Amino acid sequence: MQIIKKEIEDLYYLEVTSKYIVVNDLYHGINIMDFDLNMVRSIELEEDIVINFSIKHEDELLLFCYENECAFYVNLKTESVCRYDLSDYKDTYFSNIYFWQDNIVYLFADGSELSVKVDLNSADMIKLSSSDFVGLSLKKQYTELLSKDILSYNNDNGSALIIQNSNYCVWYPDNQIAIDMNIVALNQKKENIPSEQIYCKTSYSQDAVVCISEKVIMVTAKEKEDLYIYPPYELYRFFEGKIADYNGEIFLFALCHDNSSDGASLLMRYNELLIV
Image (tube, rainbow, N blue to C red):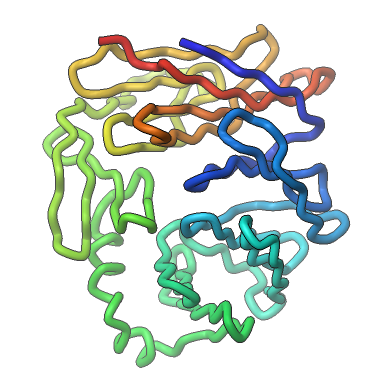
């Protein structure tokens, strides 16, 4: 397994798109890197911005800054940025299930029927009524997704990671097909597991599933040994991880923090992950 490590001050946000690695640039913008963690460019957003959540489509992002009551559309290729006011959506947290088609994005609020249409051409956010939502052709897909226990979601290929018959499956709600990955799903229904060792985040690719906890990341794939990755230093803890298929190889990108708050944040890339 090969590892690249890069120290970055106050790192808390990570996203992986089709071509780029995106992290926060302190509290005023984002840094864009290539898959070798070389800096491509920085994009300024606004002072004192905290990115809480993001969704993506190819190399475009919507960054949600709930504390700042705003969202930013960012095109990573053209560097174009558009700010959206979220003051009408106070105390609303959007779901990681969404539909992004060309220049239209449909957002759904966690735990409610609220849906919002974002028109990237006109920079409008339109709250949809119940009747508008019923008329959406995407309603069936959304309903199907809500009926499953979604571990992770991929808008670009219209799929979600679910557990079915004790295996991980990739579920396509458009045609209601579930493809068994032939990987036994992780079972953490055990008592007395320390909270920092509970796998609370999941990422997946076509061939592998990554489960992330503070103290360990597990990478598992069909007919291959499970790989356990630990923080590089004793006081460090994992904060985020994303898996990506790139040029026929599986990469894992992870954020790591010093639990004592004295050390620098680390952005790491792992490749040559899986042992036959």
